[in-house]
Image 1 (cartoon, rainbow, N blue to C red):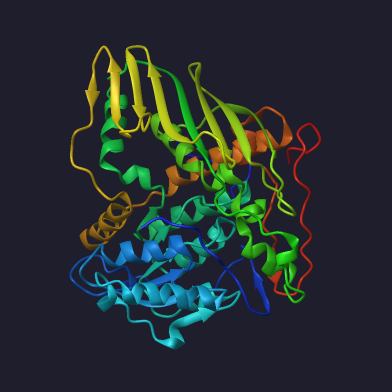
Image 2: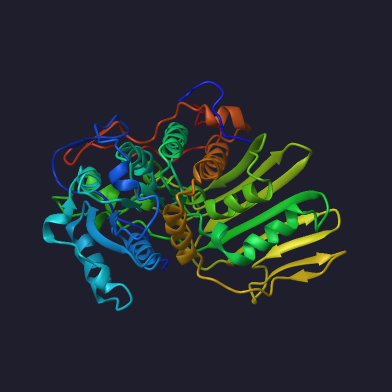
Length: 442
């Protein structure tokens, strides 16, 4: 089922840092770009594809490693980030990697720093763009890359608010029209074991699906720095960007930025048909200084046919950790990662365990992306990657407001978290943390 708004038509590691410099940038606007596809699409053959990385943190650097290992005829020609230090650390790491160093050909004038760095990289002659900045910027960067006719690897999640998701849907449709690859960073969809068990589920190996339970219990990804760490010259924007994970407009909250992987597997179970509605509980139990995200959220999704999915997410130090998925059916239970073996198995009327080949799912994402480009049938993950992102945002809405939220309310929400424009020296007040029962559904 497509994720249509009903009213408005319109290797792993720490995540990425983004933005620095002076001046202004328009977020989410229209971009003038060359939309001719012939030069950049490379539908087949052994032409060398030029790759550019936007967002040079740990995840972005890892994506670049995987990208360069995904096809024999690739070269990395450009890097973009707001912090020059991020670019230099990423470049040094890539040049030292013996597996891909020969494919790293980034000249100093192809290292772009600033609020408009992404635009300069897109216009630098690359054929493929890797989007790995904080997700608040994903809709803007995706729109610019599609407008310029680039193939795209797009890290998850795809947005931090509903207007952003609607923008991503529009960009994904344009990418399909232009025959551009659009591969999502929902890496579990590219894991061989997960692919097989979801095939078993869809083939009714556990009978009718009754309930889904997913866990994402872990520690904090990027703790907020204390106020004393902020220098006298650090602007509001720089401070929030250096601590991006702790601000809803940039990360979407832990549910949206991290546990979206588990929500994506819930969506996968349901063949990407969105839920009817959701209720949730959540809050903050550990100090976070100036940040405004929760450290735990539990969402209850109701699907058609009386099927319920329960998503438990917590990011607190010193607690029980688990990242597992359970699908309970009328004839058995499918479980993933529920024990120390991290097994993928079914128990019930049919007992089954995945014993097939194991793969590096991060690498497979890129292997399959470039194979699809070369074949002239590029992958487009646009619709389902948007559904999964919107489900996570829907859960956050329900937790923050304390209200029951329907799919129609969520996808048509007018709440826009990302500012329309950014300036390095602008005042950027931090919204208060949401209070259920008082914070409103917009």
